[in-house]
Image (cartoon, rainbow, N blue to C red; front, side, top):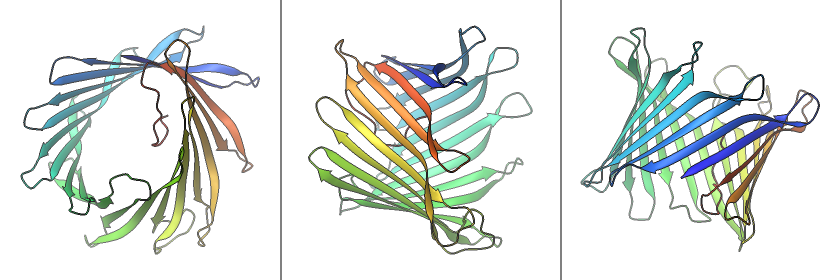
Length: 309
């Protein structure tokens, strides 16, 4: 399966110009292995396509229910060759208690012209009798000398995704004495507004407020809202991002970005995807800065998650 996306932006003359092309191909290697390759092209001086990045992902599924995913990112270097800049290896397995454990390692280039581990993440998801799932996530960073330092612990109560559900994430980080302290909390709520409309609101609270010095208690610093409509002829998602006003200790938020995604089926059996982004300018006003057009043979649907960039 091949997906193609063309991104346009507004040029100096106010007209739309080609900015970037993305091609993603997914193949089933065998009964246990799937592979995808995503290539990103910029435009050269004469409008020709120039490969600037390649993302590869390979997934291996075992009969035991275990999975291994290897993701590799390669960028174009000064010599015009692709060089690996990041690799992530994810191992997931089912535990006897019904829980699932996922261990990830992130590798970056090191001075020895190879890749070395810089971050480890362990996540354990435990289903509960009431339909929720308790998730604990631990993150460690390498000190470069073979030791790992705990950087963050995240606990999450995950719902089953039904409209009307609420999820809560809490993030703890060690203070100067090594004691874990609550520094961030996220509350996500989904609602069913009608037969063809749903909404999702995510509010983020933090002890770090932009432009406010010193230690602070939890205060709202951001809100992301999304409204989805879907029918037989069109799917659309309108998103808005609000952020704390710098220097305000009263929780004031301002809109900094709006995105509109529209997906429609075409007469030739493909799906047309349109994305328009409005962003805040230096005068504090929202203006259109991005438009993306593409066609795909994926099913007629739209991702309700965060927009891709």
